[in-house]
Image 1 (cartoon, rainbow, N blue to C red):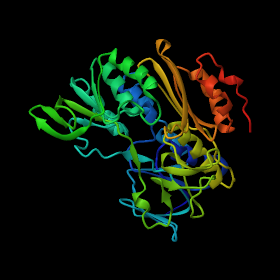
Image 2: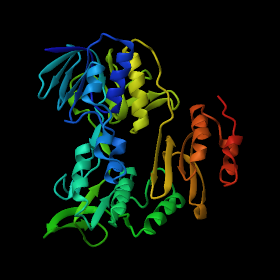
Image 3: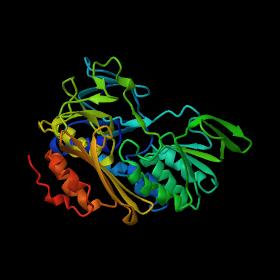
Image 4: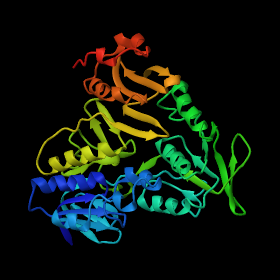
Length: 409
């Protein structure tokens, strides 16, 4: 049985960052990474750029075999954890036998949510893995009438990918507008009008009921309206965290992820979690939360690596996700939950929008369109739990500078 002092389940950026952080602190330790994919470590956030031909496929990869060899990190491709025996400190793999560990990091990420009307096939596409991107890349020259399912960041990436290839998609989503949990109709109107100006048809407040082949096409039956015919369907409806293999391990999972404390350690001593899968205790918000973005995974991987190597460091960061899409700079910062108290301001002519999220008068999050300059200050206000309620009316004013709000502790 192989034995590693530090074993990591997950070959994504959280896992590789943790491994390299451990190596920097513990020169002689044996470090192993189980990666369910057959590829070397690669960047998921660069997959859209690859599809849009902004970068070549080789630029997606983060490390070479030589890099991993020099770091003395055993990167086991195509090795999937089937179960974890925390009492015996071992991981049982589907195809690599049993592996013993001293300390364990769970950084297994997630998988694209199930779409009940058809899984990945010749004409149904997802965008979670490099294999997904390769399939779509190979098909883009033949796709002419696609339908995008969903109203998320991934849906935006599909839309821009198609448009950059000269393909005008239609969008089908059950929500009444994009980012329905995070922005109001004023913010959504800026996004919708920007897409419509490029010919994109938005079929919102509706959803698929069935999918069938219609000759060389696909026929999508809808709940509210008639059927759609398409030659491809691109599905962007979120992810499910890969926690199934932890059943019976004694590791607590909650809220869809692996629960940790502020140090990214689970209820089982010596077992940590980082990245998309970690339902970590956020000292800023004062509760557990799941965050699925690249920057968070990098920061958590580094923090978990230091703690596994002997440090005792709380993880604290304001989550942020930003993209530039069809000429708009879009950022979700902190906790953007439409159930909270919100304040919005917008300038449709300038295509600018901000929405602020408050809990008990404290700023918890912000959603920005073409207002990136406010991001650093807003992140500071969120991290310091600034009380912004006294500025509520002024926050509705487009001319108000948020730097006038003191970052109170």
